[in-house]
Length: 399
Image (cartoon, rainbow, N blue to C red):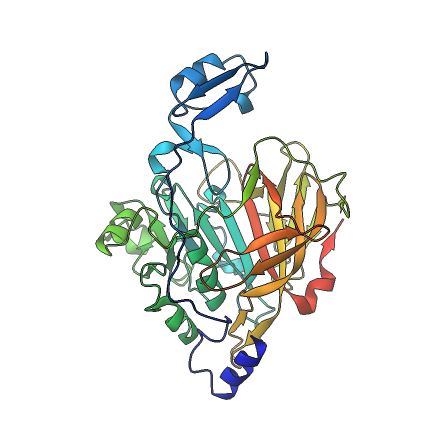
């Protein structure tokens, strides 16, 4: 792969497609299969209650149990978090929204509702500033998401793994061939620009947001109306349900609480500091919620869409280390996201070393325990994933 990229750079980097991947397959073979397996609930006396769906009977029978044992009516376990969510959206494709992470862009809106959040270096310039890619399953019920900024080549490699629709505001030349790949015509669906403008006093650059329908502009944009995310997707004629390019469930989840405390190579992981000079990302273990709270720029992260001070918190943290190639003097770059490497899996206050692997463009990134090669199992809940440059991986702090 690096040899290919070397030739590419020598040729003035005409195509970014070859810049960040080893090979390109002609088609994706995985397909989505509906879950028809009955849900079995084991009661305290050891008996079982089987239903064709998670119906009201289960919910009624379990009202005196712990909340974690109650299965809501007409629900299924989300393929992104393993949480119980509405069965009405079981086949709905997620959206992957690019969020600017410059301090001027704060506060973000709607990010606390994301199921999975990716953070990675956006450029080698400006202190290796990072950008977020937030993946939402139940995106139709979120009022405002943003602010939205441009995408990068690495994001274009990753978002199709979820059969998601990418939401962004343009991007550099290098993304062109990823997003217009004729071999994968429906796996690279994306919406670029034209989203609602909300006056946040940011001078326009940081004031673009994905919204529900019938949203009216605010402040200097008052009097203007904007199509919502659902309308934009429908107008673009994108599949709203998983299509033939869906690669399948991304992660293994444990229905019961999983502890790494006694696993081989496990170490305490209550504070995580990532080597991102621009925003100084930190994740701190909250023993009350048993999740990791996200902070940056030396302060607690707050979602501006809510008034209760909520931020971004994650049950699972995955650190993925990878090399990268820099395209030009402007700092545009791409991680070697197709390939393999090492990293860490962190949950409930402990970490273990892992390996990751993405064999090809149309295959999922998978994470394996470093000690025995078994695929890792995540706890039920939200997940934070970061791709950290290998040249600064030694500066990752986990303690």
